[in-house]
Length: 446
Image (cartoon, rainbow, N blue to C red):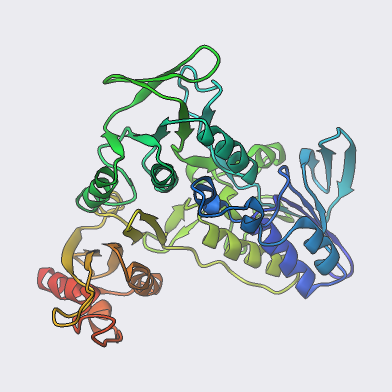
């Protein structure tokens, strides 16, 4: 579109604010309006567990840029604590916290509404003291509740659940972690996840795997958890059983949806409706390993999707190639990283997976300070194509998973991994890198 036009963006998270900034950078005369339900935009939601644990002493430190910064420095109209309540072709209606309404005519629309916590259909889930974590207001509330609690349950053994559990233990709380699946960290294979579970237990967390919560009990606030195997007294509960795309406005527009109920998009982030784009956790993407649509909600992905959507709206064509699902976290001293497919996921997607699990040191035996590192690499027996990797260790986890993810993104093979020209010096690594050792083992299986 030539000339001046208006872009409405719903959601002030990473996708929304990146799209807004990109549009203004490329087309300064464009009117860009952002609507955000919460009080904050452009914040680090991934830092919430560390705010609860006291690593971050001030909530404002989690805010990258304030709404006033975007208004004054970038010329973007930002409305916080304002919810879009009606939307149609070319027009929307929003209402602020005081009940004041406004209507906006738009030429382009970006849905960046993100995801929202899954709330399991459990009796008592609406009791006071059963908390979820998604926005900064949740963090403020949680910190107050935690200060008055001693026995705390965390429901869900994924990234958020583990990070919250660790931070609660560091505050001296008695923590019980419930995971209904056979092992924590479902994005890892069982033989890798068992080391994570050991790290949790060794640091005082009571881990209950294969145990489903069926009821929360209490008169005014939660006092007890009932599972299929027993009952547990608690002062506070954190629900961390995953998230789902927030598609209420997408449904209002009648947008086509795809994997996991996320908004279906093309490579330019266009939806099924003309002039409407979707970016971030609300939208699906392409899994480069499988070549299929997938839903992988990550902040890094959301930022890039916002960049692509903004570029296309502003007239600079760009395609989003997809992702491989690279993620990392830390539990106490143990770094945990993964990318691509697990063995089970590889089977589900029609591959014939082979794997190599390497346990070694981060430095040569003669050089002091080496730490144990574990690397699992998965490949396809028929093609030699790399499918995924998982890395555990106290140090050098990030470098290893990123090196592998780069090869995976380029659809590399076992041979590419073996011959990858990785750096070596005794203070940093062994002459045979764990990734290269894994590749050498896999070559024997091809």
